[in-house]
Image (cartoon, rainbow, N blue to C red; front, side, top):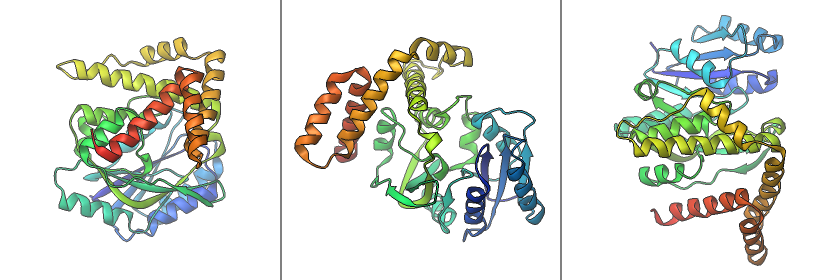
Length: 316
């Protein structure tokens, strides 16, 4: 039995990204781990063949091939069922872990027995492996993290390392098309589980062109809104349960997703990105005011961003 089980899925990654990701795991200074990889696209023969080579070469790597595409959340749950580690790590097939990632995260657990999940900062890389930015979150205490998560998801999914019992207690991921990690984190908050943000860059997080398309961004915005509503619902109930179902989710998306709303969101996102990136104060103020006037989408984006910065600086 290994101490850590790394859960990974693949779908449309290219082999070069996969090899970079796998090499970053094979080169870890901490060696007591296994890797469970679910292939969610059996027709990506290049990926399938390369992963079979890894599996034949290393006895701690296990490959599972889905007969049909079931999505990230259900694939991760399947990987968990095949795992045995006391701790569960997340890793994506196109991201890169620093050589001492697991060492540093395990030391946090050793020194803080009450912690349930350790996450970290990241560096952003593009499709060519070029670094173009960093997530710059200074240390936040557990209360600041939980209060901030009520506003937005800011924790990098492939940087997670959690206790196995945490995954079991929450019954794994729920079947969201995207933002399943945000739902998982808010259910951690509901259950008063402790999250530790390690202020180090332990993951290079690959931002791909097709992962940040505007159309998908609006759908992700709607799903995150639904996830927040489920969280608020749980907070009002003594049993800490909500009304989530896939049918319920699809109805919510259908009610809120249309071309007119998507176009309004696109304009809101453009103004918000300008407000966030502008360095000159008077221009920043101009774009902030513009966000407050364009639509409810831009108002939510800018108000949530300001609330998040306030919590980081002064607590709550």
